[in-house]
Length: 128
Length: 474
Image 1 (cartoon, rainbow over the protein chains, first blue to last red):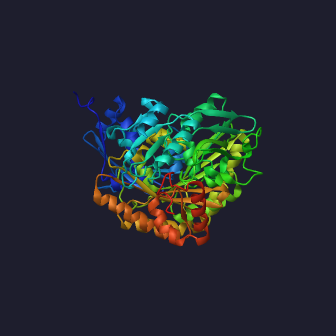
Image 2 (image 1 turned 90 degrees about the vertical axis):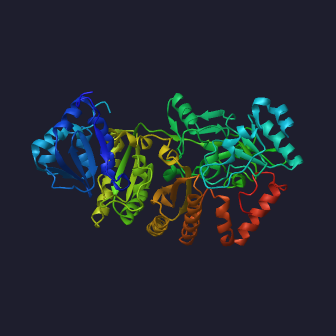
C-alpha cells in the first residue's frame, strides 16, 4: 500500500483532558483527512497550527502523515486561527471564510499559505 | 402460579427458567439484583385483573415493568415475585386530533407514539424524555419524569388526563373526566384528583392498564440552538431570564462532561480543561411562520446579551445543524427520543444518578456543592438541568457511569449518591423517581402527617402488600 493510500491517523493526546473543541475537531478530521485529497494534504504538511475558539485552544500537529491534537503546542505554531465559537464553526460547516476574516470575527496569523493548504481538512464535507 | 399463568397467557406468555430471566434481575443502577420467580407477558386488563387476584390469594408480589431502563431499581421484583412485562401490551387506543389527547397502554413506546403521530399528519406532538426510543411513555408519566416539553407543560404526570387502573383486589377503576360514562378523557377536572393515588407511587398502589394524556400542537418551524456558557451563574441567570420571556419550548443544560462523553471520551477527567465551557445550554424554539421564529431568535439573543453585559461569558447560539456538520457524533441531541449510548455503552454497563426537582434560585449552590462532591469521589460532574413548568421548578440531576462488575466502583457510586442526596435535600431539592435507598434518607425528614397519609393510602389500596413491595420506604 502506498503512503498516499494508507489511512491518516488522527490522534488526541490525553483525550480525558482534551477540551470540547479538540474533540469536535477529531471527528471532523477523521473524515476529511482520510479522503484522497485529505491524505495528500496531510502528507504535505509539517508543524503546528493553533486553533483558538472562544476560550478553548487546540493545536493540530502535522507530522509524518498523522495529525495529533494537543491542548498545548510543544513548539511555536507556524500559524493560528482564532475567533468566537460560532463564526469558526460556521466556517467549518461550510460557510464563507472571507467575510468573517475581513470583519475581524475570525483572525489568522502566521503562515497563511499553510492555513490555506490546511483549509480543506477543517471544512466539513458537503455530504456530511 | 406458573400453571395458572400458562393457562391464562399461553406458554409463550410466561418465562420461568432462570436462564431466560437474566434481563429482569437487574437494571443499570447499583440496586441489588433480585430474582423473580416468573415473568408474565400480559396483553389485556382482564389478564392483569386475574393475575392480581391470584397473586393476592397466593401471597405473591407483583412488579410492573416495560423497558427495564429505570435507574433506581423500581422495576426489579421483590425476591421470588412475579414481573408483569408490558412490552406486548402496547396498543394506542385513540388519538383525538381535535381535542388533543391520546389513550395508550403501558407498553407504548416513545418511538411508537412519535411514528403514530407522524403517520396521522404530524399536527400533534408530545414531549420525549431523555431516554431511549423503546422506553414507555406511561412509566415516565407515572413516575413524574421530565420531557423536552416540560418547560411549557411540566413533568409528564401533569399531562395525564385519566387512568384506567387494576386495583389490588382485581377490580378496575377509572380516574379523571372519563370516569363519567360518555365523557372523553379531556382532563382531571371536575372530579376528585384520584389520579394522584397512582402517580409517584412506583406501581405500589395499583397497576395502570391505560393512560389518557394530553398532546400538544406541532409547529411548522423548529430550531434547536446550543449556547456555550462559562459559569454556573451566567448559565442559570440566563435561564431564569429566559423562562420569564415564555418563548422557549424547551431549555436544557448539560455540563461539559456530557458533551465530552458524547464525543467519545468514556471517562472524562473530573476537572475541566482550561477554557472549557461550564455548561452547554440548548434552547428549542418553534414557530408557525418564519417571522415568528426570527423574533424568537432575536429575543433569545437579547436575553443572552443582557447577561453578557453583566460580565458573563456566553457564546452566540449555534444551530444543531451546524454542529452536526462539524461532528455527527452530536446526533443524539438532534432529534428526540434518542439513544444516549454514551451513557450505557461505555463498557462498564453501570448508570446511576441523583435526579432532583428544586428551585431555580438555588441552582448555583446546588451545582457547586454537587460538583465538589462528585469530583471528590473521582467522577466527572455530569449534570443535567432543565427548567420545568414555566420555571417554577427545575431539574438538577447528577449522573455517574461506572463498571458494574467492579465492587469498589459500585460502593463509590453508592457513597457519592448518598452524599449528593443529603446535600441536595439540605439545599431544598427533592429526588424524583425516588429509589428505595433514597427513601431511607428522606423518610426521617418527611412531614409525619404526609407519611401517615401515605401509609393509610397504601394500606387502603394494597392491604396485603401485593404490589411492588419495598419501593416506597413506607
